[in-house]
Length: 308
Image (tube, rainbow, N blue to C red; front, top):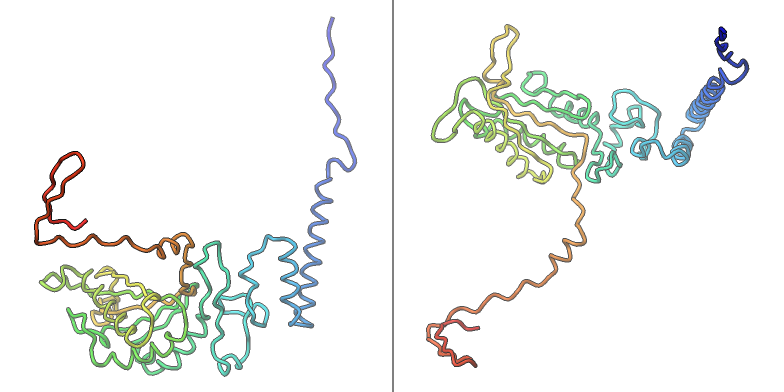
């Protein structure tokens, strides 16, 4: 007897099939409402903008607090490392605004430093002639502001000693970098000439010595050493001229990379602090010049110069 196969289950019509569209539509409606509220607040009362954002963040606990922890005004200004920034010419008259102590990640030591865009403006004002002569170049790229100083102004060939012409350059640098707390990476370079003598074992040593020369010069001008790190690149990144030939004078350079992050003193561990407060054990007494005879209870005799 032939058995007829069961008929396939028919798909139910109704809300089951397209139920996800309802949730999606509700989600998009809520998101649109949030953006409308944010736009309306920012357009009418900018002083209430941060309060609304903070309320949303507290409710969701999903947003990064560091983005909204600034005390500064303004909404989404371009050319900045911060989502909230001042605008207009009043910024220069009021000086650079410090963004330190903003939480940027789960790592406690990563704090926002001073705005790199404002540091760049200050440097452009001080190094106007050097920038025109291309002995100093500035570049702001994301988290770093690089200050490239040509070797013709800093070093002679095969030497790490700063030239006298560099004194004014380092003084101007210190005037801008000393008041801020951004971390500094000082990078040394050489040209393609191979170095190997009794002073420099290789181009790495020479490039590192050049970076250290600039570091010590800035340190003597008041920039604390904890903010500075030295990097040596040797001869591997030479600069070329317009014709494509290696420019030895420019290649003997030092680049100071200013980080958007500030130096923060590491927190002292309470356990380590307790260990540091422990009184060290007393030092043993010095041996005597006279011999001592010590009779022990078991009739043993010890002859020693020790004082214990």
